[in-house]
Length: 151
Image (cartoon, rainbow, N blue to C red):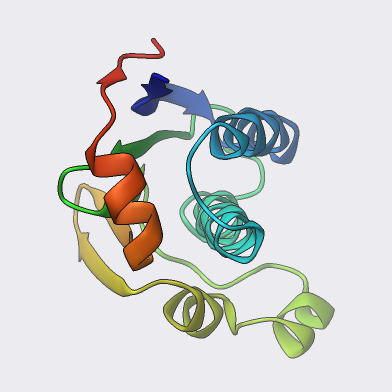
């Protein structure tokens, strides 16, 4: 069986509706991979949280030009799934004070869900890379199979 090896979306409008679409695409992609349901849910939740953080914190609410890039890659021979969310803005706190009181735990959540997380912030934006190590049975299954570009 062939598995789709990646999702790539560049220049996605930093808008809640747009990232909801990426969540749907990611859910469908994950369903085709040799992962258990708990791991699929962890990847989906952490990926969406990283996307939501980019929308909420990288751009001002009235910025109609903010974009982000999203990559999700299945690496069967390395035994992992890698998701990268990149924005091109600069960090700012959420505008809504109620949101700030009840939120602000996104990165902690992501770190608890992923095997490894790397955040790189600079003047050109922020990149968050999340990695999940496949369970041993998934490595054996995925490592024996070919992958192709889902494009």
